[in-house]
Amino acid sequence: MLSEPRSGRLAAWGNALLAGLVSPDDAVLAIVGEDAVHRVEGLPGESAPVGLTLALGRLRTLGVTGLRLALPTSGHPLGLSGPPAFNARALEAEEAVICYGAALGLVPEVYEAGPAGDVHVEVVWHCLPVREAPPADVPSLGEAERELAEALRDATAVLSRLDVAGSGPVAEAALDAYRARAERGREVLAPGYPPRAVRVLELAQRVGLLVSLAEESGHGGAVSASEMAVRAEALRPVERTARRAQVAAYNSVVEEREKGVR
View 1 (cartoon, rainbow, N blue to C red):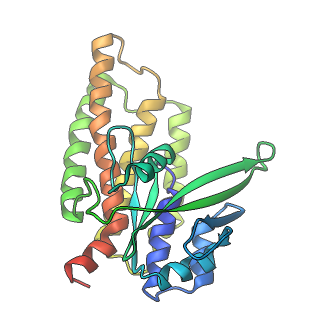
View 2 (cartoon, helix red, strand yellow):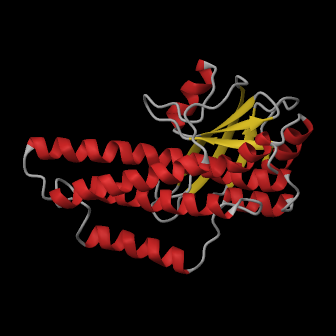
View 3 (cartoon, one colour):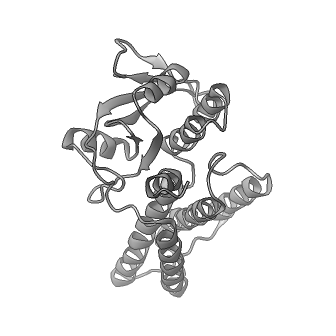
């Protein structure tokens, strides 16, 4: 969760484009990021993969008015609504985008080539039919914010007692990189998102970083099997809560539209 999921970028900037808040060129540039190229395969009306600009325009003509993020893991189909074939593909990728206004979903497949330090990344988005139903287990922004604060407090207490919150040069370097990105004022989400969504996403990302550091720090001070089990139990729910909050933040624009707030 330290890095922004590609499906999150597509959902956020796709929503900004659909709302008329950014140009197609700016949206595609933000979605592609540091990748070489993105294409969409299986789009209705297209017999071959097409570029993102054409794909986003075609989705609009098909009735799509918003995009939702899904971040499923084994046993937790977060943000998905079926059918099983789409869920299985999304679970394999651990991310997906669900269209609002048309029964379609997009799952990224990443191809990498080249030596270390000069990797060429291409992404193919597979467009597939989805079931029109409420997404699984996605909280409201308010619920996500409260759950995140509670989970962080409980997990921090356990990890601090076991001395496994993350230490050493690797952890310090990761924290320094995170602080540097925050200080540069990197844009979070995209135009059109409410400030609360930005706040929830930033907190979810910080919590995700802490979980990653704790997982990567070896056994830390947990010297017994029982202590290691307690540590794992402490990390599991907080990671799940952070993913739920991240999805809630990305999906907030569509959720508000559904409720007639916007």
